[in-house]
Length: 357
Image (tube, rainbow, N blue to C red):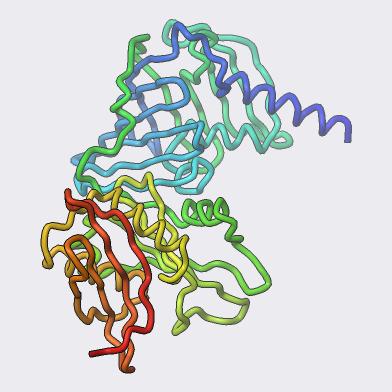
């Protein structure tokens, strides 16, 4: 028991030494060529490191991919430039580990035993050699620069096998904009990120009512009003039961840059309407005339009333509009939209049980 504890402690200490935040401030930034050998295939690219963030630009044939890693957030963004799309994953997800040798080595180091095997000079940098092993089997070896606190070379023997080496290293400034998704790219979040956001808002993944199930949805009215955004339906599914045919408990809307997630409940709740208002303001939608109200109204009714059809709009004064949904009864439900003199949306309210004229 004591031996296992000591091994775990040493592994954790080694991990901190290799990937910790306490790096030499003078070499917080550097660039390099990155060479990967995967299944006898040579893959070349560029690498940019800035503190707790780094970027790898990889080109395979005509395909260009950028991998942006933020260690502080624990997230990795994969950008496919030919399709102008970006996907975000946890650094620990299987997708991230299969694409990123540095995070894969990091994962192996956390989960297994490690030992220092002396020092070597790799491409002009004095490196400590770290072996990661399980029982008597070697899983990976890294040569970690003492001055950069970064692996110059990695040999991974566990599947998927690959060799990685950094060449032409330059200790130079790295621009912040390299770690941003280009303007106009479609941004996708994985379901794990949505679940994390729900947890932050007190919505537990698993309860006695069931486990959260997430489904992607969309509509033309949403893409017209919120181009590039993603939308998800949130269900609770009990073991042995399907969500098919069930009404979702709530919806989430994700901005096209992936930075903002809005959780939407029933329209009459303050939380839903507040998030809906923030979502509209973040998109910077302005209302100039009735056509703008109709366009926005169709999208909001689709979100807040789970696909209900648009009935009509009614002007309630200079800066106030009512948006109604279709109803088989003699009463209408809807939303009240208030705008200021500049056309910016100032308030969103729920309107219930208004008798049809």
